[in-house]
Amino acid sequence: MATDTPLRPADSAAYDENRSQSRPAPAASGWAPRLRRLIGIDEPLLAWVPEERARYTWYGALVVNTALLGALSMVLALSSFRSDLPLAAVIGVAVIWFWVVLALDSWLVSSTHGTTVRKWTLLVRFLLSVLLGLFIAEPILFQIFDKEIRQSIAVGNEQRVADYRGMLVSCNPTDGASTTDRRECARYQLKVAGSPAELARQIKSNGDRVKTLSTQVAGINKTLSAKQSTEQRLCGPKYWIWRGGVRDVTITCERAREATSEYERNSKVKTYEKQLEGLVAQGQKLAARKDGAADDYQPLLQKAVDDKTRQRAADLDTDGILTRAAGLKEVAESDGFALFLTIVLHLLLLCLDAMPVLAKVLSGATTYDTLLGARHRASRKLYAEELQVQHTCARMEHDVQRHRVEWDTNDRMRRLEQEHQRAQAERAAQERAELEARMGRIMRARGA
Image 1 (cartoon, rainbow, N blue to C red):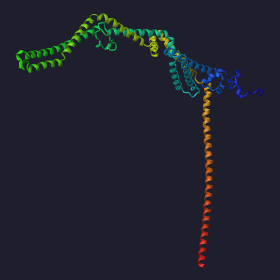
Image 2: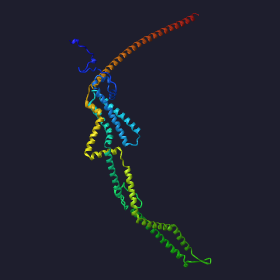
Image 3: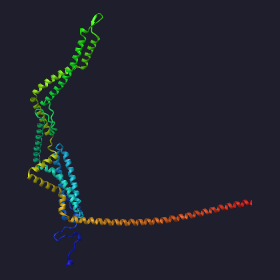
């Protein structure tokens, strides 16, 4: 008989006859609730659908795995780009980055719970996950292709050094000829003393100065010779005179001598002649140096080119993030399989990094989301009703206060009226008493 079937409480009824799981299920313990708590799961609500505990447990594990992958990526990045950092600093930065990635992914996942989440919000969260995944994936790819990237960087740097050396050799010929008229040589000029061309320019400049100074000295000497000839003519025996019993020169002769001496002092002909002798000697030295300049200049030029080449090779970056990114690009472009493998690894790492949000997009709304959405709607409804109750109570309280104020006002008005009437009666009695006293004084005065 149906009436003989024992009844079970509603909260312990199973969804089907093959399962005896109660609703809500007993509280779980261990590490699983902690993983679910990371993604914002409400355990009392999930107890009504315990079948989804495993789903959300592994969901939380995905978030932790992404954070661990981010920390590993940060360690690899710092080890590659900042090898001078101590181990404690690397571990500290990795722990901080682990917390940042964990907090961001936890927020991204926890904000997707409930049936009210729109598709475009999931897309925005997925894009944020992809951006985070790009930042995490690159250092790992650098480590995977480390050997190929270093080889590509080394080959590229060798080519750059060779090109730089070629430009130095092209823009600094062994004969020392000037290349300033070539625009491409503006950054490759070397200043090496003792080049044949430089010595030739110095000899030409010295010769020009010798020629100019010789012309100047010759002009001065010509003028001086003319003045000396005039002096000899005016001071000759022909122009002597008797003075004091002896023969003496005239005043004109003395003036000519003074003019000659003054011109010789002012013209500085001796100084110019010494300068001319020094320039001639310098020209001879330069001519002697020019004969052996070709043999002495080439080793100096070669040394300057080698020094500049070594400096250029030392200045080239080998471990910078941009350099390694360019190396990864060259590796991918140089071989089709390398390009395919790079794309596949990029997509794989991006999927791993974006898996917490991607799993939500792929799985869609769950029963837990439905229950959470129902709770949200019930909470909003209860809150609205609570607001209405609070509004009604507040309005009634205001009515009571208003009624109390009205009665208090009427009572105070009656008391004021009574006090006013009593004061008027007392004032009238006082006035009558004063009037009667005055009349009595007047009557007594008249009777006297």
